[in-house]
Image 1: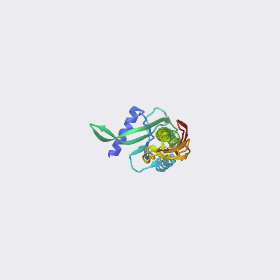
Image 2 (image 1 turned 180 degrees about the vertical axis):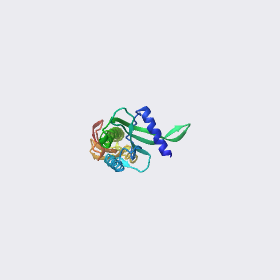
Image 3 (image 1 turned 60 degrees about the vertical axis):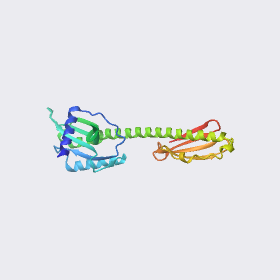
Image 4 (image 1 turned 90 degrees about the vertical axis):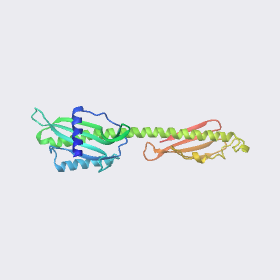
Length: 257
C-alpha cells in the first residue's frame, strides 16, 4: 500500500511540475527496473522483454541490477484524454532514489526524483504498443543512459585530475627532501653532492594519493615514480607520474594516464 501511494504521488508530481531538476548520476551503482502500466497498454510478454532489454543495456554500461528498491528506474505509460481520433499517449522515464534528508537535526528517510524525461505523442491504434516500446528504448532510456555516462565520465575526469595533482604534490615534497640530502655533508647524514644514498622515508612511500618508488639514482639526478589510486583514461592502468630531480630543480615531470 505504501509503495503504490508513493508511486501515485510521484506520477502526480511529474504531471504537475513537468520537469524535475536533474541530479548528477555519477554515483549511481545499482538499479531496479519497474514498469507502471495501469491501463494495460502493453502485454505481459512485452513488459518482460522491455525490462530484460533495459537490464542488459544497464549492465553493459556498468550499472548493477538490484532487486532492492533503493534506486528505481521507472517506466510509466498511460493514455491521455484527447479530442483527436487516434490515441494520445504519455511515456515517462524517471529515476526514484531513496535518500535521507536533514529535518530538525535528524536524518529522515525520503525519496527524490534524480532524473526525469517524458514524451507525448499520437499513434495509430494498430501501432500503439510498438510506438510505446520505441519511445522507451530509442528515446527516453537513451537520454537517461547518455546523462548517466556523461556524469560518470565527468566524475572520472575530475577524480583523475585530483589524483594527478595529489601525486605531483607528494613527489614534489619527496623531491625537496632528496635535494636537502644532496646538499648535506656525509657527516650530517647527507649525500655530499650525490643522490645515490637517498631513500624515500618509510612514512612517505604510501599516501592517500598513491605509492612512491625510486626508479633510478645517479650522483647528479634521481627519478621518482608515483602510482595513483585512480585508473587513467584507458580505465585499465593506474595514473603514473614520473619526476626527475636535479641538484637544484625538478628536471621533468611526466604524466601517463
